[in-house]
Amino acid sequence: QVQLVESGGGLVQPGGSLRLSCAASGLILDSNTIGWFRQAPGKEREGVSSIMMLDSSAYYADSVKGRFTISRDKVKNTVYLQMNSLKPEDTAVYYCAVSSSYNAYVDLRLYNYWGQGTQVTVSS
Image 1 (spheres, rainbow, N blue to C red):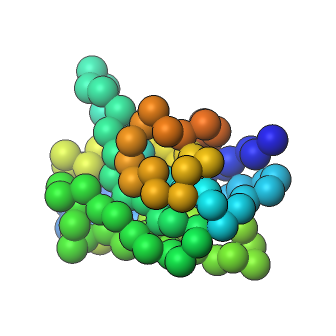
Image 2 (cartoon, rainbow, N blue to C red):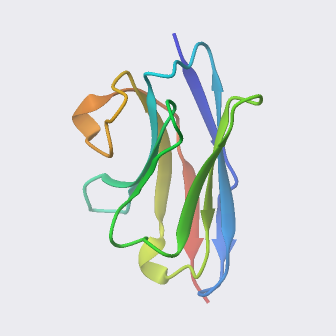
């Protein structure tokens, strides 16, 4: 059983930065992928970024490419999402999740365990 706890959300002005953390308890294997997703009010949940535990290969959705960076601390069993140049359209609840597939990218269907989410609001 894996449990995930997100933190780091908050209110930030456009152009600002935030770093989200996803702390995992339980066994995370090299065959897993950890992903970040977001859901804005009235919209479907969408994939933002993912990182493969095997080799730390990263994937980014086009909407965040060049602005967001995903990374991991293997010792702390934590995955981070550094978000720069934030825009109002980045406002959403951000979730992290674990997939048992090593190359799940951001296919929601492949993710088995989810955190409770952290709110990110980008507004002046």
